[in-house]
Structures are given as C-alpha cells and as structure tokens.
Length: 115
Length: 115
DNA sequence: ATCGTTTATCGCCGATGGACGATGACCGAA
DNA sequence: TTCGGTCATCGTCCATCGGCGATAAACGAT
Image (tube, rainbow over all chains, first blue to last red):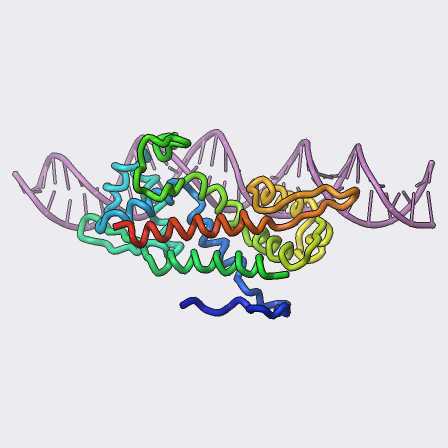
C-alpha cells in the first residue's frame, strides 16, 4: 500500500538518503498543527459539500481567518479546492490525509526499529 | 478566543465521536512540525545514548538551538530526559511517539469514514 | 440596474518561533 | 587548583503566524 521507504530488519541506512524526508513531513504536519485546522478538517469530512461560510458558522472565527486556514490546508495539499460559481467548495483530500498519516507512521516505525 | 473550538475535559457530549481532541493533537504535531526536530528524533532513535553535543555535531546548528529543540521535544513528551553528570542523555519515548502516530491515524480514519 | 451574499485578499498588529552569541554552572582531567 | 568540555538559559534579532476589520470582486436575485 505504502511505499517501502523504511528498511526492514537491516540496520544499515544510507547516510544522505533518509528514510523519511524531514522537511516534507514537517511541512505537512505544520499544516495540521493548529486546532482550528483540525476542526475544519473534521467538519469538511463530516459534510459532503462545504463552502467557507459553512465553516465560519461552525467555528467562532472571522470569515477572513477561516479563509486563511482553508488556504493553508489547500496549499498543504490536504484539502481540494473547487471554485463553484459563488461558493467555493472545499473537500478533504482523503488520500493525501492518509498519506500524511502513513508518513508519520513510517517515521515512528523507523524510530522504533532503528536500534 | 478559541474556547468554543474545544471544550477541554468536557465529557458532556461526543458520545460516539472517537474523541479526537483537536488541541491536544495539534500541540503534539506542532512539536513534530520542524525538520530539525524530525532529524533529532531520527538521530536519537539511531543511537542508544545521545547527548546534546552529539546532536550538535550531526546537525549544522548552534548548540543553543539544538538545546532548544530538545527542550521542545521533551516538553511535548516525545523525548525523555535523563540528566547524567555532565552530559544529558536524551532518548526517544517510543510509546509516546507511537501514540501521536495513532492519534493522527485516528483522526484520519474518522475523517475518511466520518460521513 | 441595485441589493445581498459569499469569498479572497489586503493591511495592520500582537504573539510566537527560530536562530544566534554570550554567559555561567557543572564536571572530569591534568 | 586550573583548564577544557558540555549544557541550559538568557537576551536579542528577525521572520512568520494568527487574529481581525475593511475592501473589492463575483454572482444570484430582485
């Protein structure tokens, strides 16, 4: 299912090719490291169609703030953006989200079996 | 300002939700959302005993910077700290690390099946 | 046409993060 | 003792984040 980036069993690891790209995973985790964005993700996944306004109604944040958070999530590749006529539609990219999770899982696995 | 996002400790509702605490997971992911800290985790897991100096030698960062990152990881509960006489010993808390991973996994799962 | 709604973006500001050097404390060795 | 090495913390600087209001653009409805 996931890419086999982690060496299994072997204790030799390449010096310059890390099992997980620290910068890549840190960037995506940064997009997730805000409670409002987690809430947004949960709400997006709970309803099929989400416009910005809908999220604004749920969270107690200004519209501009929510729009900013949505933009961060889109730029991180975790949320897909589809400009409807008037209302933008936002939807969780479940594949990308699962990929982040598996990346972190790979990091943890490599940290736990790294010795 | 963000009180309405999460009711901390409140167990009055969320009867079937898998209790994905947005603030808790965001905090721990924040500790992981920096490439230097990911690198530190990888180095800590690769060697059984790691003092601060050892990490400084590998990463191209000042000693004070590395010490700060280590402190952040310790405060997040991801790294255990054991003051030796002269050299502090840092070690990955593999259980805590696995817990973060499973928390994110739970969030992703709830986002993917949350409809 | 105007009005109302939704959205993205801009500017601003306070708070935080991340980097560094300098400093002092601690400890082992000479 | 002194010297060298290690470490945590302090202060400073700069960049970014996170919040808001205001604004303009786009669109539907009237």
